[in-house]
Every structure is written in C-alpha cells, then in structure tokens.
Image 1 (cartoon, rainbow, N blue to C red):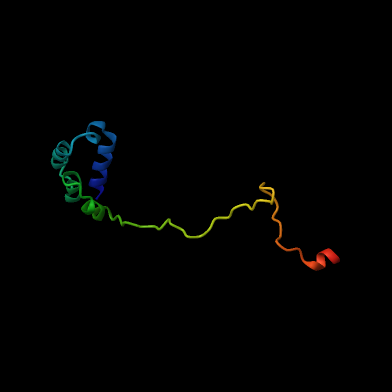
Image 2 (image 1 turned 30 degrees about the vertical axis):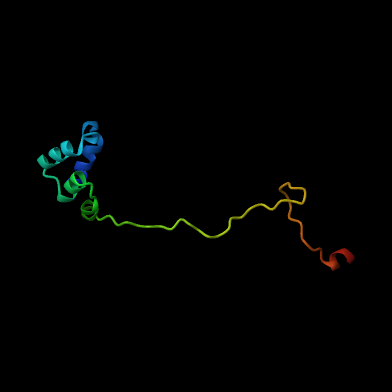
Length: 95
C-alpha cells in the first residue's frame, strides 16, 4: 500500500503525470509495477479496488434535516424586536 501512496503522491507532484492521458499514465504505472487497484482506477476508471486497497469505506451522511430553524420573531410593526404575547394575563393588569 505504501508504494501506491508514493505513486499517487508522485502523480500529484508532477504536472506531466497529473495531466497525462489514461494510456500514458497506465504505461508509466506499469513500468513502476503499480498495484492492480491503481491500474484499474487509471485504465477502467474503477476506483473500487483502489479504495479497498487503501482501506477506504464509503460513508453516507444525511444532511437533509427536517427540523425548523430558529428565526427571530417580528414585532407587529414588521420590525425585528421583542416578542409580543398573544394574550396578557388578567392578574398582571389588575395587580
């Protein structure tokens, strides 16, 4: 696996390799005895073997939350401000 990581690093550092066609890159990797996973990713565009070789697991996270946000309430005149109660308790007026 460390050879694969070294090859990926070399591809990332070398603009000629980074922008090479799949055939050109496959030739370079074949000469470097690249792993089957890396060769499959380059030749066939299938990264499943490479992911398995590197021990990567696909994690899916649901970012669609169905909870409401907290919005500031508007005052009766349409300006953001203090909340106004719908009903004033009788004891606060009389007391």
